[in-house]
Amino acid sequence: MSRLAILGGDPVRTRLFPAYQTMGAEEMAAVRRVMESGNLSQYLGAWHEDFMGGPEVRRLEEAWAAHFGVPHALAVNSATSGLFAAVGACGAGPGDEVIVSPYTMSASAIAAAVYGAVPVFADIDPESFCLSAATIAPKLTPRTKAIIVVHIFGGPADMDAILALARPRGIKVIEDCAQAPGALYRGRPVGGLGDLGVFSLNYHKHIHTGEGGVVTTRDPELAERVSLIRNHGEVVVGPKGREDLAGLVGYNYRLTELQAAIAVEQLGKLPGLVEERIRNVEFLAARLAGLPGLRPVVPGGPDRHVFYVHPVHYDSAALGVARNVFVDALKKELPSARLRETTPLIGAGYVKPLYLQPFYQKRLHPCVFNCPRYAGRVDYSLGSCPVVERMHFENLVTHEFMRPGMTADDLEDVARAFEKVVAARRELGSTA
Image (cartoon, rainbow, N blue to C red; front, side, top):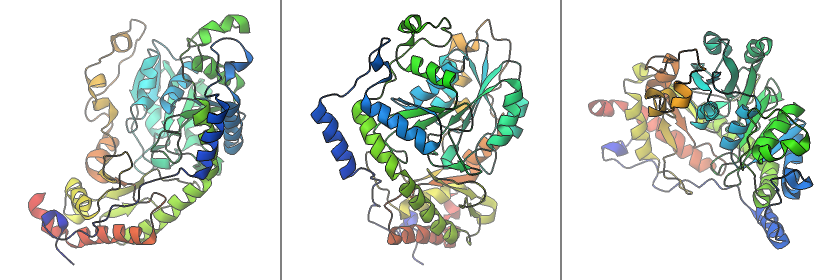
């Protein structure tokens, strides 16, 4: 086998991998139809028949609700907006705590602080990388208002056990499904298991509209509260006859007709895109399974993982090479594709544990961390979530080489690169 590229040898591959592209003739036709209508948005921020949006938004909401088996779906302009609306709909506010994951996009945790509630970080399960009942239970207090469960990387959290903790205590459970559209937990779609689900239509997700999101729920009261937060609710509670304004000060979280029309077409492609991701992971997992020190997450079992990324457990003791050094060597063997992206398709870990960000370390929001109504104390110190720290800094590799559009030859190159670096890993000793 040739010398490693990071040490001056020839890489396994010099051609860029195909970019991830889900747009096609269907989306072009949908955009053309909306453009020709001249109706790019039909919301009114007043109590009117258009308070709930125009025909494309409503068509998306009906299609989304049917696809995911829930009675209510509300389109929003981002999953971040959806998370904010979901926390507001649950009534969280100053003095409350919201239990969140430390291993996720920042909005999944900051959604609590937007309403003056305190984010409380629970550790992750080392196999699912999600919150679990075992990690949540020690964090519960009389101040716990909600739990935001992130189905990270496309794999579902153990929702039955989490709900068994939350339900008797009256704690709302919000599912962050941004990376998991189409994932199944015990045969049931994520997004309809807790009190609210939030999906993303951001450009690098399974399906997208550039930016956008959808909130799902089985509860008509929560659905109405989300709709009020989405569209200037404070001006419509009078005409609607509502007297409860808690958490219902409205924003402009509205999706456009153009985006909604694209989303309907994208939704129709979701099952095929998910199946392709699973097939690609099956191939790569089979090839990596025989390599020392690497344990890829594999499809199968009682749940369906939809693989936003493919997680691989890394054992530096078995390989004799630090994880980051190994990943750097892989990057040199496999040039990344770029479609508006500038990051490689493989990484060491995922995101730095959120509680280590300056916002939490320096308590940068006085109305949250020094609120006179808050009687608790939170721990954001290094070591407070040891599993997530171990995963992020030592034991987890994530990659996107299983994205739809990858050919058999592309996947073969990825497998060959892993095999090459493992076989020649002793060459990396001087760089560890």
